[in-house]
Length: 162
Image (tube, rainbow, N blue to C red; front, top):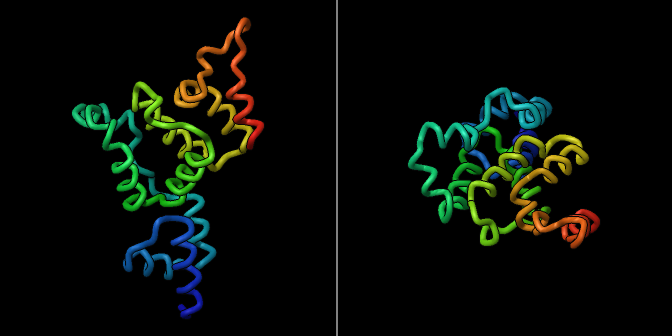
């Protein structure tokens, strides 16, 4: 591998994820640039466990999701074997407005991030449909108070701002 290939793959891994270890870099160098892109877009290895599986296997974890959730997600971002999936979840989390302090139940925020992981690479239309059903978005934009007699336009305004 040339030093130019090493620079390109290193740059790709920094942009598509959160950096890499020397061992991972060597593995990606042996794959080459094109195959590295393919693997990042279509990882052969499964991502981390879903929140539902974690809560079933580790019930005590459920109690710590509130204040520890951002730190847990940051750890997951830098240790995952699917960094682009986490990067796209972080991107969509920054695009769509939600805040933990308004959500009464922190699990809905975690589930929203999970939804971004699962739908973030797909068509934007499908992402909006999933987001429209997402409890975190519904609660944050007060859509639960929306009814015929008192129309709440927060959700529509948020979508139009995109």
